[in-house]
Length: 148
Image (tube, rainbow, N blue to C red; front, side, top):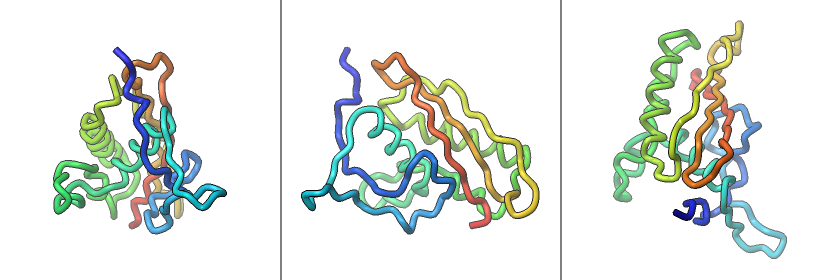
């Protein structure tokens, strides 16, 4: 069976693996040097799709015919980075990624130890998944700003 990573999508300019924010205001289309809208394929496409799903509030696209798309991570806004929050975040992440047909299995979800001070509202997570038809795992690291 061929892998599902040959699909393509529009490339977004903001959600990078190294960006430690859940700020969605700065997401935009990536434009090529020829002033055309860029596309993305392969593993980078799946990485972007994972971030799109996780940062989209579940139900936000209901009017467009996708009521289940997205995650419930937004329900954790206002919580501190403690064990209960991390357990709920893992449940919400697994629930969300189960919708992605290009993921064969979620290998692990690991949370960084909570920090003190202003960073106590930041939930840093590393997610490793095995894409369908691909031998190498895809690792996505992101941070969720629980302060809102």
